[in-house]
Image 1 (cartoon, rainbow, N blue to C red):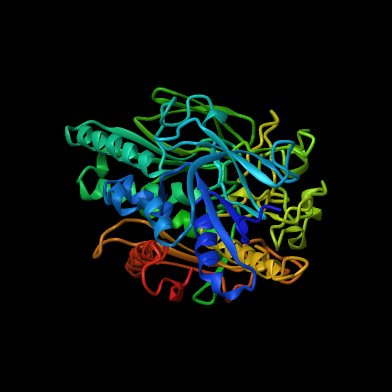
Image 2: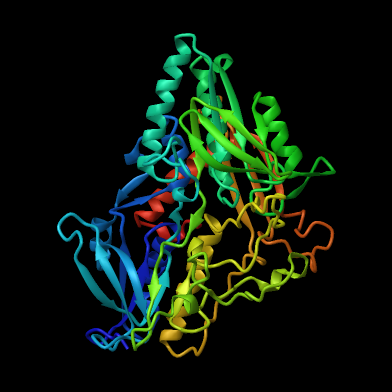
Length: 494
């Protein structure tokens, strides 16, 4: 194995919400195990980013420094070796050059850019997150396309720059069409676009130009409020309502148009081409567009000891890592909550784990659908935020107990037995702002346990108001304080 100087080595790929959470809990657990170990973090990014607040950067309500911080100084302070590098391949059986299990990385830091290295591990946690697959839709994205993004802090800065230019044009009396939503038929992360469109609407009102803007939502959801979770039902005032009614009411109140069941298949300058679930093909003109891209695995390869490519053994076709889920192909109606993973351990190699967006879901939560032309139009399952942190905590706890002799993972965090809370900003202002606060339990519906709606309605609800904005702002500062591992961070909830 990869024991270094008498210590086992736990390597974490990625330093986003799930990866950095794993690092924090492994550092905290050093005094809880009999077996000494070292934590190593590998990430291509120099900075940690609190992604949920990028939507505020994208409307000029926050700057980049308020949603990011440098990783290297923090990891140095807590004694964690940090490599600013991207992982290229995993060698779980070692190789002719190095018999220990290891990962090959390519450095992205300015001082080592392009150099490669082999980093050994005893346990590996894959928390790489997604590849932002702008290339799946022609003309999509800020780098080589005609749309902006809020997926990273730098993307959000550019989005705000273009938004402010659009607002200035409206102040001069020009009418503008603003389109926000998903940029592909299989996108996930509708929540980020959902928050962004409401914050844009709020900023337009504050700027006094709301009457000059046509605001359009476009999404691959079958109905508004699906969010890749097959929709949600909530109990309000003694009545059962669904996420569709909740989301539609927000749009109607703010004069936002919507197009659902749509797959954007091409973007030209000022024109979006999209196909609807009924097979019709349409065009939508725009002056400003923020469309979320589809996600894919980051492209990690895997090789056995003989150097044979075993990528298909460890990763699903999507590029996400296989874990302890049931991937047996079956009709959608035959899938169940039991098919979802709970330990996030790779079935082929017991010292490999994947958490957050990096693991391959066994099936869609929302019903898979295709147009008569064969175009898939359905949201992919969400795996971010609270669920990704819960996975990381469970996996780190299992690894620590396995270091001390446990034969298998001991902790579980199935999304079919896990709730999630989302506080979605609909405008940032301490007096006029608001947010939609929603909880669901469980994230993956369990129709055997909850046959009517798949979820426990006593733990599933939604509200909107100023108090939600205060909560969103409080969570922003709380989670950044926690991520920086300031005094008392471990007392704060994840």
